[in-house]
Length: 239
Image (tube, rainbow, N blue to C red; front, side, top):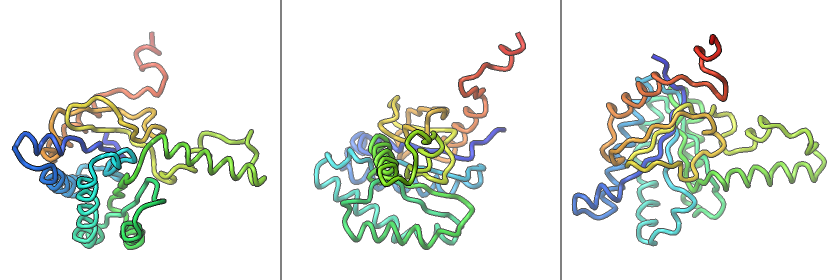
């Protein structure tokens, strides 16, 4: 079975999961963290080398302050409680997103997680935090424009590969598969450049209910598809 080396997940539905059970939204986010733990543990055994998760978008700041505070607290708790296990299990942590404006303690934790695990190779866990696809593209364009203004590069010589190297995901292969839970059918500003040719799988389950079986089913769905990257299917070429 063809297995994608890089799987990206939009972890959606924590709040609705909690509401359906008459629980506060924070309970849904806590259950979502546990689902993330299980997914990270399962990924290497399923042949996944890179796992990117949409943890906090640049648009999430518009949520109520109490919920944003709860999410920040959960991030801190996840890193403090899980970093040792991630490191022991050979997981490398990469953070993508805009770190400008984040609280110093948050920035410090993110840096600690990356530095401690930099040499690990069993799985690369990419956490998209304060991340937005359009924002990432704009920041990359500004970086290249500044380099061109300094005379370091020729603007006419900029290629797609050069642009990709200016994104937060430099050195990370594009995801072959993007999964979204909760039944929503959109990317919501996630990996807009990188997901240009990704296969998309939308699942009706809320993120806290996501299991190893859901992940395995999505991988089987991926394996059944023929990826053409804008070309023709084999039978169309033959005819």
